[in-house]
Structures are given as structure tokens and as C-alpha cells.
Length: 314
Picture 1: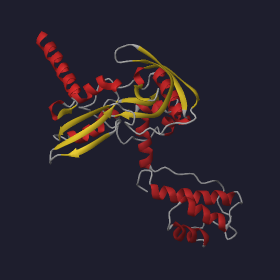
Picture 2: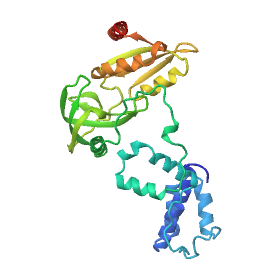
Picture 3: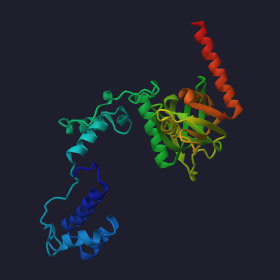
Picture 4: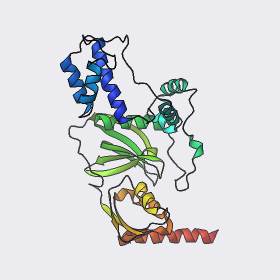
């Protein structure tokens, strides 16, 4: 098998593994075997897997529905899959999900495996250089506490440093999702505070603690509680449209094709993130223009005047 984590063949293997496990435990019957195949595989699998198992073609089951195997089957990894796992271990973001001890064990198990590629082989021309400090112990602890709260649907209490440097204390935040921006190389928390959607950069969170379980977690649609609408005209030069969709992947948006090389992109964002949105739009240069609102256009003009003044002074 050359496919990385093949859905089809991985499913077939796992179904057969469950059948053989029941056979090893002496619990397998014709009815349970059919049920395992029907529930775990695909519609035509009954016609393929059941005969091969039952008539002795694969020699995995005895006529009495026992098995000559001595141990429970485990999922083998191909060389390609091992190389992919080794590649993941080289990404520093892996430390957000596993402890140092767990990572060390996996690295030792894959010590002789060559990764598919290494992080230093990539050069990013349009990514901000101030990405999150993924290996920082405090950042890792905050990330895991937030991830726990998202999964377990628990309130969060957090101290947060705003982009102006002031400290904001959030209580009873309802976490909705954790999102990663490839453009910014940062994680963000989408949450609800006082019936408003807020976006918190994890790198600015000073401390965080999960609280009581949330009884009713609102299934927040992206932008549902956002207050601001921004309309951008995009000139699709050097794949600007694709880059813009990736850049604003964490926000609700709609696109409209104007002609072969121009698009309208309507983005929903929270008022509290306006300064960040300003820099995100400016990062595209002349290929992205603000259609509306007029207030955001004025922010662009003001920022450009400030930059021109700084350039003149130097």
C-alpha cells in the first residue's frame, strides 16, 4: 500500500482486525461478523470481505469461527506513513499536542526514518515573521488548557494583553474553536463574551483557566456575531485571490467574480480586531483595494500618511 493513511484499505484492515479480535476472544458468530462488516466498511464490502473470510480463502478463520492467530492484529505502518509521521515530529507545533516525553518516544521509534521534508527547506515570502512561540512552556500550557475547554465545553477565565498593551480580564468566556492562520503563523481562539464574538490571539494570553461546564454551547457560525463588514476588490495577480482566501480563512466571507482577473471579497470581522484587519489588508499591497466602508478607507489613508511621514523623516 503506497497511499498515506488510505481510507479504503485502512477501513478494510480495521474491519478484518475487529473480526479476528472477536475470534481470538471466542465471541465471533456469523451474525456478529456480518454486523462488523456492515457497520465498519462500505456497501459492497459484504460481497467481498465476508466470502473471503468465511470460505477459507484468506485462511484467517477456522470453520468453527476461531482463528489460527495468536495475537490481536495491529495496524502496520508503511515506509511512507513512517516518513510522514517523522515529518510531523519535526514541526514545532507538535509540542502543543504531546509532552516532551511522548515526543521523545516517538522520535526514538522513528530514529532511522528519513522525513519527507524538513522545515528549513521552506522559504515563506508572504508570512509574518512574528509567529507564536509554540515551544514556550507557558504558551503550551495555555494552549492545552484552551483545547481542553473547547473539547469539554467549559467556560474560560483569561487575562489578555490587547494590541494596545492594556490588560483585559475575561470571565466566563465560551470557547467555540481554535483556529490556525498559516499567513500569520498564529493560533486564535474564537469565543463568545457577553453575547458578542471575540477573537483572541493565543500569543497575547497571559493566563487562562478552564471553569465549569457550559450547559448550552451556541453553535456559532463564522461571523454570526461579527459587527463589521469589509468589501475588498482583488486583482488576481500572482494568485492573490487564493492567498486572500487563505489569509482570511478564519473569517466569514463571500466572493463574487467581476471578470477574469477581478473579484469582490466580502469579509465579516469583529470591531475589536479592526487594527489587525488593517494590517492584514495592507500586507497585500496594490492588488487589494477597499471598496467599503468609507471609515475603513480612511483608516488605510491615515496609516499610509503615517508611513510616508516616517519615510520622509529617515
